[in-house]
Length: 439
Image (tube, rainbow, N blue to C red; front, side, top):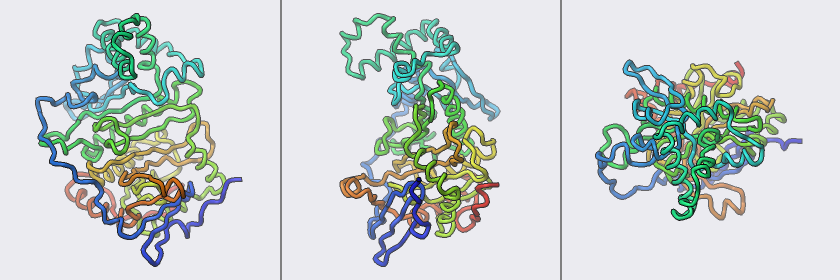
């Protein structure tokens, strides 16, 4: 039998000394915020940023637009046409990579979390006929062949192989290492910009919040379509994890905007625990939304989604929920995807590009019959989990939920007035009832 969830009365409590205790109603995680720690700044002041060397534009990191040949062959891209409309291009040959400007690219991760070899050796996974054909076509040109061989060699050297040992391998040996570029299950969705357009110094990185609402919608929708596609990698895929690490303290390898999608052969621990909780209490989502609505933790709302301050999480942050009946991302219509994207973009913009954060997506695996809700959690990486947390499983947040709301809402109002974010209701303008989670 599933463990009963904590009472909503104990979801958030403020003690007489000012300590705030929170419990996550889905997981039971306990979080404390002690007085005084919430006065810390969201980010640590860095040394004076360097001026940008614009002669290196397009070359600042391996994800930049003039270094396409340093990453594995892309699967697809979204481009913006001269009339402002968008188009998706798939399977470009190496010779055509530079003929259009990719606003967002989907590429295989060079260093996979769950590798092609994992799928191949444990499940007998091999490229499909279409993937074989795509690989053959890419390798048929000298530029494509050289690209693949260069990237394979770079990966093998990065894992410790010497130049001498690499030189002993035949082309066939190297090409066997390229199957994952065409039939792997770990993809990246990479934005075009490294710095914001017109930036003067290296502090002006291009984050999710610096995109326009339309660009962010394309970024979100592109991610959703890639997620749906990875569920068809093979019959053993049971979950596709989607996340975004922004800045190195949040686990990013490059300070260049990108999301990650990883197909895995099991349900996430979080998914299993949440499904058990939902079987025991089918109204648990209503209860979470009720806590947010009655504790003044609603920060923004539009017709199809709501943004709330997260509570009971290891790090402070915000969550974006689609309203209406539960659906997976790829089952939502364009209005709902755009609504979710607009609120996610807004809370990123209000957070600021200088704050390290993790964006985590939660959804229902297709083989689960419990109506888990798609939602996105934005966690601010403001502290380091240390000995107290490890020994007690009680986590210390520097900011309580109301402090997060107090910091975010004025910024959202300012950005809405200036037109930086999409139109939405903010703070006390929000009116959400649990009925909106079902209709």
